[in-house]
Structure formats: C-alpha cells, structure tokens
Image (cartoon, rainbow over all chains, first blue to last red; front, side, top):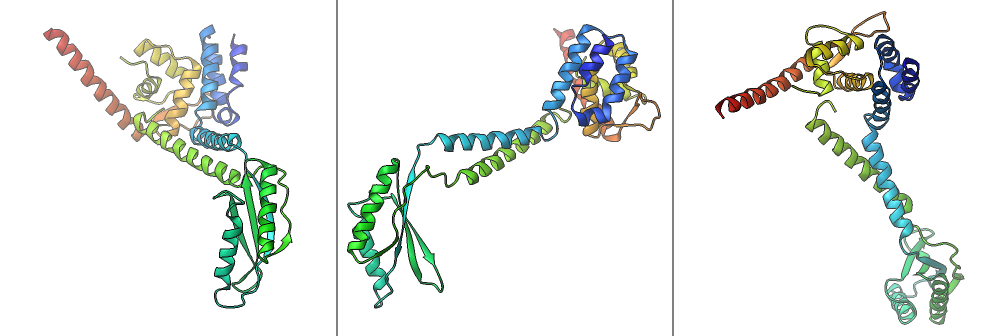
Length: 205
Length: 96
C-alpha cells in the first residue's frame, strides 16, 4: 500500500514535489496507511494542479479568449472586394467636394448603405493621391459584382481605376487577434478579481 | 469543534514546531480527526503560501514547521469567533 501511495504522490505537480515531495514520502513511510489515504493523496494531487496561485486568472484568460474567438468564428461571414482608384488632381478650390459628390452618386443605387469602406492612400504631403474602395457583402460573388459596378460608375464620372476589384477568397476577420487578446485580458482581470474575493472570504483557501 | 484542516494544523503548531507525521498524530489525539497525507500537505502548502507557518531549518527529510506571528493572530481570531459560537450555543441550550 505504501508503495502504491508513493506512486500516486508522483502525480503532484513538479514545482510542488520539488518543495514537499521528500516530506510527503517521509510521512507515508512513518504512517500506517489505509485505502482512504490513497484516494486522499490522489485528490490532493488533483487539487494542487487546479489551485495553483495563478490558475484562476490563467483559466479566466484562456476562457475569455476562447469565448471571443468562438463568437467571432461562428459569426456570419462577410467578404470584401477591394479596388484602387486615382483621385484627379484638384483643378479648383472645390475639387475635393466635387469628387465626394461624384463618389456618393456612383455609390447610390449600386451598393446598399454601410457596405462601402474607403481607405485613403497618402504618397507624400497631405493630399491623398489614390483611394482603396472596398465593398462588403455576406456573399463573396455579390461583393465582387457590386465592387465592379461601383468602379464602372466611378469610371463614367472620370475616376481612373488603378487596380480592378479583387475576388474575395476568404471571409474578413479584421478584429480576430485583437478580439481574442481583449477577451483574454478581460478574462484574466475577472480571474484576478475572483482570486481576490476568494482570498478575502477565506484567507487560507 | 472543527474539521477544517487549516485550523487543525495551526492549532497543532500552537504549542511548538512539528513535522508532518507529528502533526497527524497530534491532531488525531486532540481533535479526533485523522487527516490523510494529501489533506495535511494541502493545508501546509496553503498556510505556508499565506505566511501563517514557515519551515524550520532541519537536516532530516521530516521537515518541521513553525507558526508565524501572522499565523498566531489568524488562529486566535478564528478560535475567538468559534468560542463565541460555542458559548452562545451552550448558553441557549441551558436556557431552553
């Protein structure tokens, strides 16, 4: 029985055995062990794996990150088709305003509201020389078709197309890494808060 | 009075340093509670992490432990609370 209990005692975490392993073996040698002691040591080893000082915050961080990742990965897919257009150099003071009107006219009737993303590309100075235009849609083919129609409408208004709309290959996951990191941080903070409450309620657990 | 292994270990160390097996036999004698080795060392680990007990220098693999000042204060608080409950319970039983 003693040999069996000593074997089960090997299940304690390495950091714990490094500090208390020899003592526990000495106690097992000195005592008259029962079957219940075998389960007592097994339970102690499991508890020590679970109640390590930072187990709660680490588990919270992992749970938070995994939850956010699962939520983001199971959310409905959205595809973006991107094209690059050149902004005509300003001929007079209101050139930028006129471009804005042209752009809004081209978008209207082609792309539903809220489905267009615009990213200005600055080459030098403060004037954007070209613009990346993206059209998002839950359907990848429709996203591409709408982007092509938008570029054609812009071309009719004299806007030059530098790069035609891309065919989206995979759904957008723009905030996956940031979301998982944020979820982990929140989970970690909740874990520390729970640890603090636990310590306040019972100073030796 | 209690089966809390943390309190039993602290109470066992209240009259002097003891190693693990000495604590087990002492606790069984004064509280009639037999702590298994896993339960005993779970309590020792927690109490040492909280600074309520500390190991005493020893060449033997039977490591003795000593109650710290914080451990004495904690034990005293817990026993005072427990004492109040026991006194109140006994008084009410007498009055009933």
